[in-house]
Length: 315
Ligand SMILES: NC(=O)c1ccc[n+]([C@@H]2O[C@H](COP(=O)([O-])OP(=O)(O)OC[C@H]3O[C@@H](n4cnc5c(N)ncnc54)[C@H](OP(=O)(O)O)[C@@H]3O)[C@@H](O)[C@H]2O)c1
Image (cartoon, rainbow, N blue to C red; front, side, top):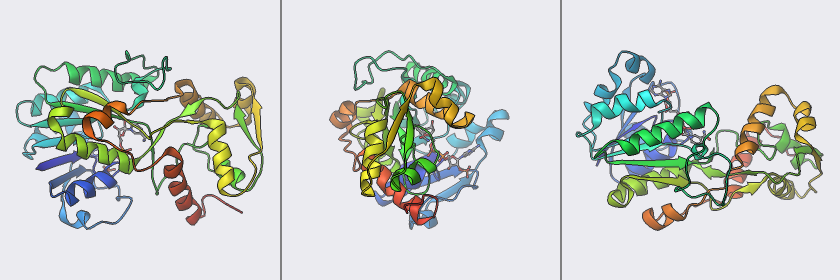
């Protein structure tokens, strides 16, 4: 198949572009050409690279038409954050492609009720990003006759960038302290959750959705690891990797937030207020999605990379 990926060099695209190439598809990778893929692969020399700045072309009203002219049978949209962007591309592509795949987020869900949360739960997103992504999902699923599939990834993990840490933010010092057996502080009683996914597992799920088109059409799927992590459990496992005891201290939220900077407090709050715990039963049953990585395996790989780069100090 001829498949265009919008944003094919980022966290997900770095795995998706090579996977589709290896599967024998013709891949067209759309980006501004600024970002270098996270790992080397023969695909990067072979795939068609199309340089387009979506923001600029959208503002001029041309983006949808430029993608349509690429004549792809399937389009994977990894860079859509506003319903107006979705409307523009769908107006141009509807009737001209066989499959449109949008990358959403598990943050289309608000706080869980029955967990693991399934795709059929009513959308209760809060926060600007989740609300916008939920609006895009509702729009796409409401366009009559649109051959669309939506995948909702969890917190992306992979070698090349920092994963969400056991305090629910991106401060690498948390990993260093756990690795060295030093105390860390966690909000509340550490029972709130995070739900990671390896970016390669997200790529796997996109490939399966493309190749199981009829089972995927008109559907949304969570794409996360098999199980979410509690913050305290996550911290304990990280310390154990380095044969150190996890020295965890717990503080009520209002006290904990004063122990970190404003940015980290906001990121942690966003994660613990969502406390995602999502089901992948639907993707398993319909698409044959089977994650290669548990959350901990994915984080371990990323942490090894961070240590090799000197960004996390293990001793
Ligand atoms: N990060 C997470 O933890 C997370 C979790 C759940 C869902 N998601 C979803 O995952 C998707 C993002 O995927 P990702 O994390 O793989 O993306 P990413 O790493 O941020 O990569 C973005 C890709 O889009 C390209 N790009 C950025 N701005 C562009 C523009 N104006 N015009 C054309 N191309 C542009 C980038 O290349 P250039 O810079 O070279 O243009 C790159 O290829 C989003 O839909 C997001 O909502 C992310």
